[in-house]
Length: 389
Ligand SMILES: Cc1ncc(COP(=O)(O)O)c(C=O)c1O
Image 1 (cartoon, rainbow, N blue to C red):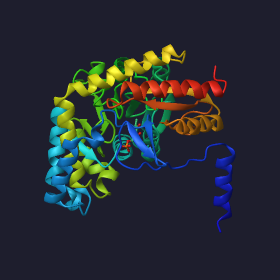
Image 2 (image 1 turned 60 degrees about the horizontal axis):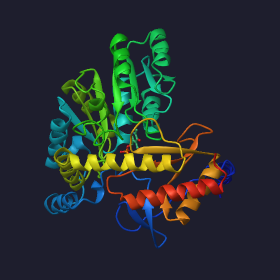
Image 3 (image 1 turned 90 degrees about the vertical axis):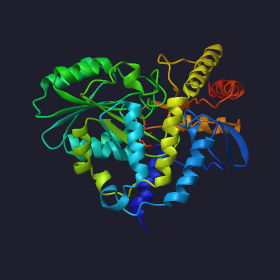
Image 4 (image 1 turned 180 degrees about the vertical axis):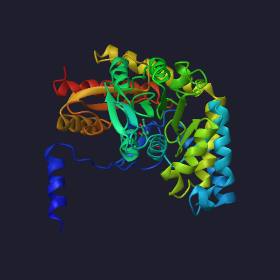
């Protein structure tokens, strides 16, 4: 009926880039049910296991009883309910910031915050490995997009030096989502101050995980108190729920309320989601043992990789990529792993740059040593079958 759509799909297929959806039966956890079998799940961002935490679930159930299912409108119309306010206050205390605004997702936060801070005639500076939602936010902003080499502050400085823009905004992932490396935030912040730029750190994967108190990459690298840093965090990853937040100055948050279109023009998060996230923030604050367990698992997994002669990334984070060649080969390896009871997603362009298809492995606090050993053995055997060097 639509030949052009068919043609486009064929092109995607020919490039080995066709995506498919795998259904998980039952809750998220270290093992999940796929096609009637239990498999070890190593591609979820539920890093602390809070997606199925009994206290989080209870908080959500109680909130459904008290507040109902939906919000009926955007936050500015009739959608701001007391759980939204409570969540913002709890995150504000946790992050130790002046003010916080909750968004419906990290995608919304980036596509709302970036265009609110940069517009026509301004320049936005993004790391080449920044998440797609950051790039989309930059495109929506209509500012001039300048991309610097991954974590390369010389490359960033070269661009900043040449800029004549009225307003400059630098945006970087805290932990790069597909690589697991940590951005050099201290050096980037130094450049931001030197060139009078705003710095946005999208810490989707760092918050709840890094830092002595779990406050994320900025805490980990000692830059969280700088007033020129705007932090974005998600509630759908380490916090196990859904939603996101922007944390910064009171003025910034007021500007977002007035300018961030996904905040203004989209129905607000269900109150039960906010109540679950309030509980999750409380758990992250009160139970450092979850982070400790996560890092014990990361260390163990890295040791297992070493034992089997597989590459071990430099940065100690929960995201571990293994480069696997072409997109087709990466999908085939991922399928074979699933047959072996190990679910690791094949990550291909355009999620990652051309020629860098990979398995993206994520470790959680809930995995057992058995889960992790089985996974590394399975990865090694599968890669050997494919002649991996
Ligand atoms: C760095 C980064 N930012 C933003 C997002 C989007 O967050 P959300 O899933 O809450 O929309 C992601 C999601 O994977 C991400 O990795």
